[in-house]
Image 1 (cartoon, rainbow, N blue to C red):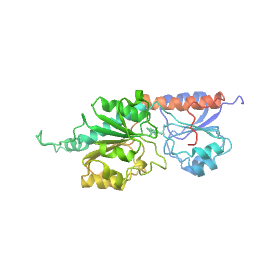
Image 2: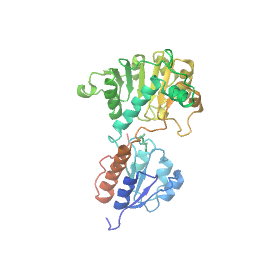
Image 3: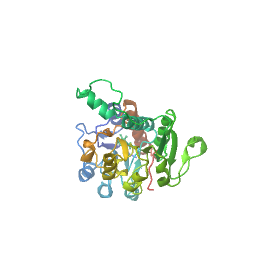
Image 4: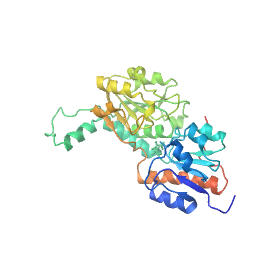
Length: 325
Ligand code: 8YV
């Protein structure tokens, strides 16, 4: 340990209060124009820095991690998801990796419920009709959607966010089905129906909410074959990662009417999303806003800083250390 302040490279323009604390604690290089780094430019920019504070979308792939300068000892991501970081490659180089669990659970579950309701109740068509001055007035047959209260919700991935989604859905008297790597204890399950095989859950889902992380096993998990197992008229909600869904298959099912609607906050390859979504009236689309509240974005930044400070200032293990699976 030397007396100099450890140096931290911020890859994005983070919330004001977060950057205030970052610059008070560290010798920090900020990114005031929020210009995105690609892998090679990130590795080059990190020269001489002890830590990197990054976000989802930053390319901390195998090649980038391998190219990071010797100075880098820690990567703290401003996100709960960490599929953008090759954690195994970082571990090999003894670079610590941390994420920001817990603090975005409620905000993300709120957006999941918004996606569910927006899709089921045709919010996109309603707001478009109104804002385009095409609303001729109330009509008995206008914009009839899918009834939510009392229906069956299947949750793929019953971690923190999945459980928070279930809690919200219970307020709508929905019956909860879920599939998860491990069954939850009764106090967390709260009467939800567990399916060890997620495929067997699908016929029970009037609504399917994706709350599982992006891994090789979940890549394009929602494919044509699985969509066919959902009841006709089901609604698919995704607030996890776009890559869990096969876009072609989802778009085809939304076009054919097998699915009534989809509510999506995340997209494969975002922000360049599949063009087909733009043409669908029954897709309620949001631009990855799950954690976008003032409180939550601050809490995420503070949590990333808690980790950087623990390791770089106090030599402790980061509390939210992520290890290779
Ligand atoms: C974040 C998210 O806003 O934390 C995550 O994993 O998906 C988002 O809600 C985003 O990833 C910021 O890095």
